[in-house]
Length: 85
Image 1 (cartoon, rainbow, N blue to C red):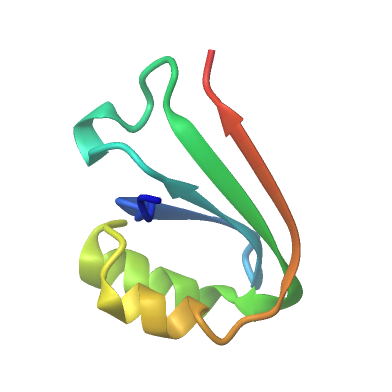
Image 2: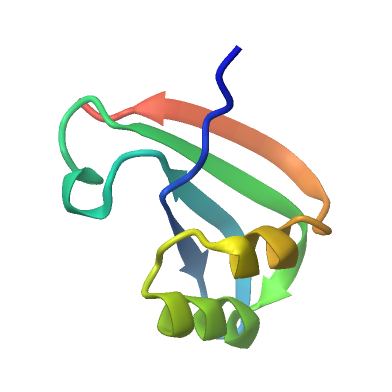
């Protein structure tokens, strides 16, 4: 079985907190094309927006080991997977 790896991550944040994050599995330049796979993770405890913004600014939305370590210890409330049409 092949392991799927996110290519980028986009946080849905308010001014104060991030309630969910969208993981995209296509290359950045193709991430909004029709048929791309997206996974939205809703967090059990919202994440301070300053923390998610830090990684977005540092890694320009690419999913790196920094993000893997940061999000790896967060508790998932729900997961929604879909493809764009």
